[in-house]
Each structure stands twice: as C-alpha cells, then as structure tokens.
Amino acid sequence: MGSDTPSPRAAPKGGRATAALPGGTPDARALAWEILQRVEAGAYADALLGRSVARRQLDVRDQALATQLVYGTLAWQGYLDHIVAAFSRRPPAALDVALRTLLRLAVFQLTQLTRIPAFAAVDTAVHLSKRFRGGAGASLVNAVLRRAADGWQQVRFPAREDDLAGYLTTCLSHPRWLVARWLQRYGGDETEALLRANNQAAPTVLRVNCRRATPASVLTRLRDAGYAVAAAAWSPVGIVVAGGGNPEQLPGFADGEFSVQGEASQLVGCMLNPRPGDRILDACAAPGGKTTHLAELVDDDGAIVALDANVRGLDRLRRMLRRLGLTCVRAETADARTWSAPGASFDAVLVDAPCSGLGTLREHPEVKWRRTAADSAELACLQRAILSHLAGFVRPGGRLVYATCTLMEEENEAQVRTFLEAHADFMVDDPRPHLPEAAHRMVADDGALRTLPHRHGLDGFFAVRLKRKC
Image 1 (tube, rainbow, N blue to C red):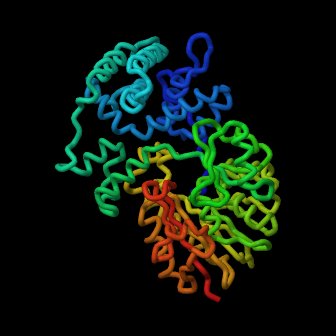
Image 2 (tube, rainbow, N blue to C red):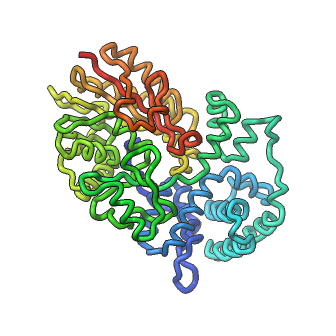
Image 3 (cartoon, rainbow, N blue to C red):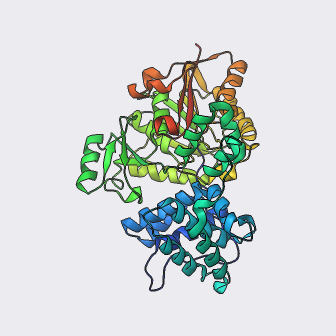
C-alpha cells in the first residue's frame, strides 16, 4: 500500500494517561495505554510508537515491552473484549475509551504474558485508572480485573465443532466477516493457521543499501553493537533484527546503509527488474520504501517519477532519498488516476495500489478492526482506475507490476482478470527470472506472487508482472 500513515488525531474526551509514573520515570504500561487510546481515536500504532519512544528516550527493555503491549493488545482485542464482558456488568463497547483500553491492556497481560505476575498487571492498571477523571473508574477497573485474574480460564467460548466461524472469530480475535471470507477461500485448518500467524508480531526487517554497504558488513556492524540479527530468508539484501526498539536508532541507519522494509515488499521491487538507465514510473509511492529500493537497484542511474497524492508522505520520501544518497527520483504530488504527462512513456511502471492492507495485520493489527466487508469493493474501483490509466504510459515491450498488501480476491486476482480483459495489448509475464531463487515457489501457475504469514513468515502480498506487447 503506497499511502503514508495518517497523522494521529486528538484523543477522545475523558482524559488520557500521561506516560510517566510518579517520580517522572517513564513507564511502558502507561505509554501503551496512551497509545491504545489514540489508536482507538483513529491513529496508527507504529507511527505513535516510533515518535513516542524517540521523544521519551525509553531504555531498550521499556521500548520492547511498550511495543509488545500495544501490538499484542490490538491483535487480541476481540478475545480480550470477550473476557472483559464475562466479568463486567457493562459490555466493553459501553465503557469509556480510556477504561475499555485499560482493561484490554491488563487482560492481555493476564492471559498472554505469563512472565508478568497477575497481581502486577492488576495493581498497575488500578494505579493508572486513578489518573482518569479523578479516579472515577478505579473501582470498576479493580472489580473487573480481580474477578478476571481468578476466573479468566473458565470463560466459555463458542465450540469449534458447532460454530467454526464463531470459534475462530472469538478465540483468535478477528472480525467475523473476515473469518468467513477466509474460511471460504482457505478452509478451516489453513484459516486457523493464518489467524494465529496474524496475531504474532512481525519482525523488523532491514533492506541494505548496496551502494553504501553490503549485507555482510551491516550484519557485522550490528552484531558488534550487540544486536541479534540474521540474514533474511527470502531477500538477498534483507536482514532480520530480533527484539523491539526503534530501528532508526540502529548503527548505520543515519549513514544510509539500510532502510526498514519488509521482505515481501522487497520482492516487489525485484519483480519489476529495473535496470540502469530505465525510465520508471512509481505510482502511489509514499512513504517511499519501494521507490528507494528501485533507485538502489538501478544504482541511481535512471529517471524515476514517484507519484502520490499525500504531501506529507512525499516529504518523508524526499528525506529518505537524502539519507540514502539517491538523486534519480523526482517526486510529484498527483492523483494517479488523472496524472498527465503528454508524450511520456516508461520502460517500467509500478502500481503499488492503495488497498485494504489485510495482509499486514502482524504490523498493523488495528486495521482488521477498521475494515468492513464493503471496503474491498470500494478500493477495487480505485485500483481499477489507477491501473487502467497508468497502463497507457508503459512503452511497447515495457513491463508493469501491480502489487497489493492484502489477501482479498477482488483487489488481487479479480483486478488482474478485469484489466487483461480490457487491455488485450498486455499479458502476464513470468516474474521468476527476476526473483531470488528462494522465492520462486511463491509464484503460482497463474504467474502471480503470493506471500502469506502462515506459509512463509511474511506479510500477505499479491503481485503480478505484466508485459505490454510490442
């Protein structure tokens, strides 16, 4: 998905926790509570965590704990609400946002983090609740959590054999409409595996800028600094970093030796196979991960036009270009459905389409609670308009890659079928010659690359390489 993360909106009325316990010591649980309230108001967790960690200068252990608490609570939100409802006289939806998110946070620790003692999770939540409206909710928080600490393991859930969709929806914390869609597509066992994988945190993955470093040199530098790192399984320039924390604080980041980019996203750039001297059009380019990868792949020798309607996202892209030492990209604020460049043609076009993002739930767990069944159909109309318009800029013999980070058929396979029916001058082109050998098995008989969290340990991506006939 090419769009930049939206800026956080103001938290709802009713009070929001500060991020420090008495005495001014930063506290991971208080910060997690603050972020969860702001996510409930529409913000995105990853952006908030990055800014908050940098601003508060938390130590590494507190960074890791805050990250685990935020992502875990969001991932397990449906399951946590089911448990809270069993011990509260008021359903979670009827509670104030501050109390609802605090109860979820505490119950996540009770049920999922076995190394945190139950009394610590309860006592901390009660302590934090006293900051909300002068402690008006403290008695409710205390009562619900004391009961939950003693009885959460006896809470009843839908029986798998009687209501598979209800069981998976509640026990594995996904919206029922989405579970039903995936059951229809993948079947029971594979859907369960997918949901479990979605609830695991995504690793931090780096993409080495081979104009300034090598994977081996970056691995050595990070290991020497005490980080647990390993070469990525699928991308030859990828490095996986264990543990939490802000990757922008890693040695080598400021020097432009690497960027943060998931492995599945890195494979999309490889599929386009950009070559030095190419003219490339990158649509929906912000915040810039794929754009900068393309610039590195052509060794900064080419002409890349990066389009996006998001001004802030393009500003972020320009900062990335400066840090990485790349000069071949021209960023333009434009709507990809109507962008005009009379007479222009390109050797390669990347349509990194705006999508529902339902393949990235490991790193954006809040997305599953915001999407509805109607969203994919609406997004498909937008994708179709972008793809159809930009296909006209591909030169004869040139190539176009269409990519999304979702698992929804109407945004993926159906989109490509519709495009090919309307554009007889395009054909599917085998991407395997341009992918790392390890990734060849992720390409199906229809020529599309599909990555899945439960099969490959990657975000769920779809990408197809199309060629314009001469």
